[in-house]
Image (cartoon, rainbow, N blue to C red; front, side, top):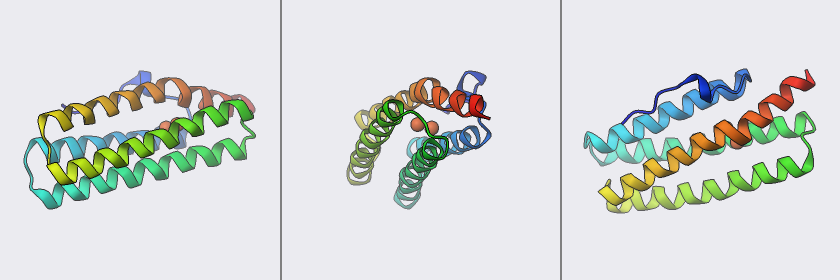
Length: 135
Ligand SMILES: [Fe+2]
Ligand SMILES: [Fe+2]
């Protein structure tokens, strides 16, 4: 099922919000490629793009932390979360490519996506608010 962009995901930071929208589109494309059985090439392409874009987006947020002198404690917590999430996503990507979109793997994909949405609503929102207040 496609994830809709809703207002509760909005952080108020233009760059962060634009990238989150792109990230959700990449996630929807992957779920689509799996559920419609578009073939292995499409599945690999969508999986690789989602991991690539997740890493790109996380590094942009981390640059924003540096640029805005985000408090050390907060930035450490946030960066650690990104790091852990990337390794989980890479593990899941490898499984998806090896085993295909089984019911178990798709449940894991959906679970990872909902964890990401929670991250957006909490740690990303906190970062965006901090940047906003600094302006
Ligand atoms: Fe983040
Ligand atoms: Fe984010």
